Each structure stands twice: as structure tokens, then as C-alpha cells.
Image (cartoon, rainbow, N blue to C red; front, side, top):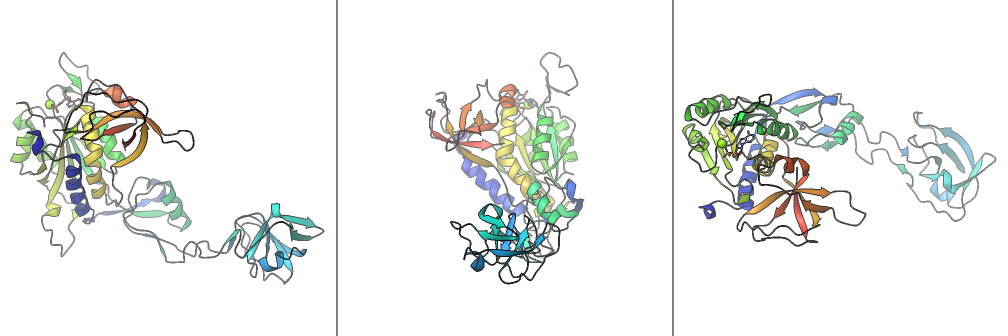
Length: 430
Ligand code: AMP
Ligand code: MG
């Protein structure tokens, strides 16, 4: 009975609580060359190796001076010049200015930089243009204004992208300690599935979920491990689950609906599964199963003195409904946050944003289900406008072409049967 299943929010809260627990486990650490750290998660903080900036730096081409002297608008004698890369000059003699380039150290004694555009230069002297003002600290960044030597700049658990790599480089890290990526077993089930390079016989289809889930896993910080496809039989599923026990997390696609060939749940139960939920009031993806299995997992080391004794001996699994759009949506909503936590990341999805609906949604209501429908959003609207989103026409949750033409999912709340054009709506970002 569908009403027995948790709502989207209830299921998300269950996942969130488990993710919060998993991120606290002690994770294996790898040292990785800086250039290869994009997409990884910091295992140790990044600390400043020196003051930032390491010297008081000019942010403009212009003239270093004392603001009080420049503010008189009298001419100041040019006492010297410093280019970026040169050591700090100074002290600056009284009544003088010092020509300076962006990024160059400000001479000792100067407390401001007059922009070149705001100065009148004449015969080796400069003055601040009469209608311009300058005050202390203008156009320069004082030594240590961003951080002092030894300060923590980024905590462990930060996901690394270009900006974190640049910061690490500025502090002299040629390699970083990052968490080992969790290995995620991907088990496709279904008698109808053939590999991508096979020609399907009548009634067969190619296994498109395995490459899709592998890509989603990699994007969420995991290391995909695609297992051989399992048949819809108890024996086949039992042996596949035994093999998957070596992984840090398991994604099973297919076999969780209600037909007599949906044998995944009983197989999980035989393998000792503890189920957190076996359905969610969402569409697509209602038959989603989430739970934990006993695991021979050596990768997640238990914190010593940790009371949560059985934690490291269990492995999270998701039984994703086999329809491709159901698999993708349920992965993004529920599996990605668990995977991020296993990867040690303190930033976890799912990510939502607001957009304006460009046309009314259909009225084929599925009351009582939160819907996540393939949609296309223009993320580059004219200034001051919200992004505009529209549903992508689809023939149901098996419509891979619709999925591939979408770039987000429109969220239709449980209580709404349809949404009018112009409405501000939530979208789920991939
Ligand atoms: P199931 O969840 O096993 O009932 O499958 C639901 C639908 O998804 C069926 O039409 C399956 O053929 C399809 N399906 C299941 N697994 C896959 C897969 N790995 N790749 C593509 N389609 C799949
Ligand atoms: Mg199936």
C-alpha cells in the first residue's frame, strides 16, 4: 500500500541522518599529486605556509604614498619604482610617492596607492587630481589581510575543484592528502539485458543503466565497479550479492518492483539486509529500496573507541528501479548524498534551485507522489530574471532520449496536480 511508504522528505531525512553518521567514520587517506585532485575530498586541512598576501601588495598600477600627504593635492616627488616580482622598497621618504605596478610590494611607510588614472604626472612629480579623494589602505592589501602563516584555510571534508587547487598551489602544496574514493559496485539485473556491443534479440534491450550509473558514481566522488549482469533468478542474485560484498557501497538496478520476477528484495533479505525503506512516494522511482548489508569492507576503518560498533561492518545499498529515468532520479536524490558522505565530503546533495515555469505542466496528476520530471532549464536568462524551465516531453520513465535532452528535473510537490505557467518552481540539478 503506497501510503505506508515515506514521503520524499521523510526518505530524504532517513538518508541524511545515515550520511551524517557515515561522514564521521575514519576514511583511508591517499596522497595525490595536485594536478590529479579535482573531484577528490581533502583529508587534511590546507594551511597557509606564509602570510597571505606575503607582503603588502598593490592592487593597482599607480603611486604608493601616504594618504594624508596625497590628500593635500600638492605635488609629491617620485622617489623610485617597484615592479611586480621585486623586493619591497622603502622606507618612503616624507613628501614623496613611489611608482608601483599591480602585484608589486608597497614600499614601507606608504599607506595607500593612487591609481594611475587619478594622478597628474609632471616632471618627476605626481599629485592626486583635485576632485579625487584617497584614504588609508586604498588600492592595497596588507600583508596577512587574507590569512596569517599557519592559519587553516580549508577544513578536511572540502570537495576539491579548480579554486581549492589554486589555493593549495599558492601555499606550496604539490600534492594533497585526500580520502580514498569509495568503491561502488554496480549490479544490473534483468533477463532482458544484453551488453552494449551486442545486437539485442527480440524482447531484449541493451544495458544502458550500467554506464549511466558508472558516470553518476564517478561524478559523485566514487570509483565505479561494474559487476556482470545478474539474471532474474535467486541463484544468480545470491552469487552477485556475495561478490558485491567487497565494495564500499552497492547499487542494484532493476528487480525491485512488484512482479514475480522482481527477486532483488528477497535476495537482499537472504544476504542479511537491514531495510531502511522499500518504497518512497515519488514518481518516477517509487519502488526504491535503501538499506545496509553485512560487508567484508576493509576500506572504512572504524574509529577506535567508537561506540557505533557495527558501522564499519555494514555496507549501504540502493535497489534502484530499472527504468533509466527512475534510476537516475533516485541516484541523484538518495544515493549521491550517501556516496558523498562515504567519500568524506561535508557538502552533500541533492542540489535544488528555483526557476520560473515557462508553460503549464500536464494535468495527469499522480496524487500523493512528489514528481521529478525531466526538464530543460535556460540557466542564462536576461539579467534580473529567474532561469526559465520547461518540461521535456516524455513517454514515461523508460524514455532515455527525453532524459538525454533534459538538464534538470522539475519538482512537482505531492499536493499539486499541475503547475501554471509563470509559477516559481523547484528544480533538481544533476
Ligand atoms: P525493473 O525495475 O527490473 O522492473 O525494470 C523496469 C524497466 O527498466 C524494464 O523495462 C526494464 O527492461 C528496464 N531496465 C531494467 N534494467 C535496465 C538496464 N540496466 N538498462 C536499461 N533498462 C533497464
Ligand atoms: Mg527487471
